[in-house]
Image (cartoon, rainbow, N blue to C red):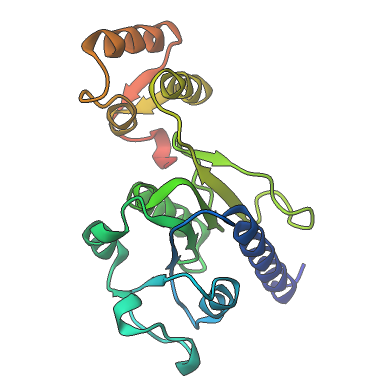
Length: 224
């Protein structure tokens, strides 16, 4: 496949997934967040899909077509590792996040997605959707089926899960069993001491030990 064909297929997959995401959040209140403006093509498409929603855009430096630049009060300008933590007003209020930032280096893009994922997920409301070219598998996100004409792995759709209590613990156990490990950050996020008793936390830790799940500071081999 030529680079041109690959580029076209990526754009077709992106459009199909964004159109599907629009269907998935029909009736779900919240903002739209575009993570990476680029030349503004995708932002322009989002404006057509969501004419009645506020669309916020993160970008390091604006280099888009003049017709595709968001209003100043909807533009979060700077490094996303700085702007996302500062965007407290978005926390739990985003219905759709679209991640389309990076370079031509696949490994660097995977690392960027893994680093930004913990900053993006808390911005999504329960039931919110993230569309991304890079995989963002994690405890709080349910992978969703892709449109029929999108090849597996070319793009990704996720929904932020809304389980709490016992269901959340079961999800944690399944996630740990699947990978063989959990990070301390994942464990702390899933077992907040203000919402769970010490007995519940101890029982969960016992089950993790029985399953052979290791606790680590960082994902092995920078899996993200």
